[in-house]
Length: 291
Ligand SMILES: Nc1nc2c(c(=O)[nH]1)N[C@@H](CN(C=O)c1ccc(C(=O)N[C@@H](CCC(=O)O)C(=O)O)cc1)CN2
Ligand SMILES: [Mg+2]
Image (cartoon, rainbow, N blue to C red):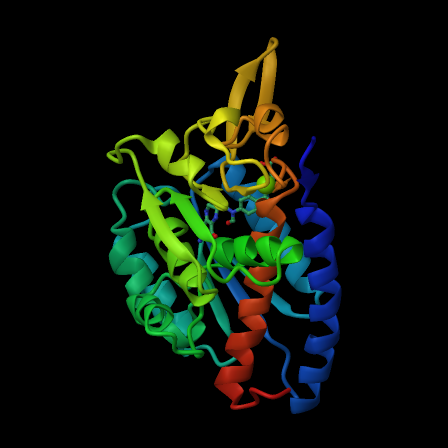
């Protein structure tokens, strides 16, 4: 039996259409939500993602502010830019595109973003709010997208054993918190975990965010399990390049109940939730949580 394919591209498009209406309604407060994106250097993939963010922000009826800085920009210059954006009333959301060049202290920079404008959800205050179940939390976009995709197949995840492969601050750790919020039993596995394949075989939900191309094999997956693939790996194959996830898609399809593809799974949801977070930040900043 072949798994149901979860169409993240279509689900994200639906979310953006709904969001556009909510942004229009928010306009009655006399404000338009604004998102500022900071891009440092010339990483081609980052440039593509930032362009997509700016286009989708404008399509949703929000304002987009782009700040492109050279690879050699200093920590001080970036800190000053973040301060300026923190103080700019028109800016509701601030996103610093990752990765940053190695000479930049990313932790210090991300902690300088006003938590009320932290639409990436990377600030320690938002991480704490997520961990304590505070609904004001702005939570990281990729994990929010993963939960949405899971719930599109199984609205009630109560009691499911979810195995998260990867312990990053951007995906693995916040996703584990969100899964706990859905009443899952959560295991985080990582590069030092023993018997990872056996562990995955006990999972009702597997989320692969390990950064290892096609690491999750078909025989790791319990029949009917839900599989979410966060990986985006460009690998050389058949004389060209191919995009693959952290899941060996064809093998896993034969056993999973549902699976996200790469591309067209989690990736588009990340940007859709960035836009949702920008509206949430705008509402919270204006005290208009109900609009
Ligand atoms: N500040 C941040 N930096 C980064 C984040 C983030 O959430 N915040 N996540 C990733 C990059 N990213 C968004 O920034 C992102 C990655 C992938 C996609 C996407 O739609 N991917 C497509 C495939 C596109 C391709 O061909 O490469 C898909 O999966 O269908 C959107 C956003 C790291 N940096
Ligand atoms: Mg994808």
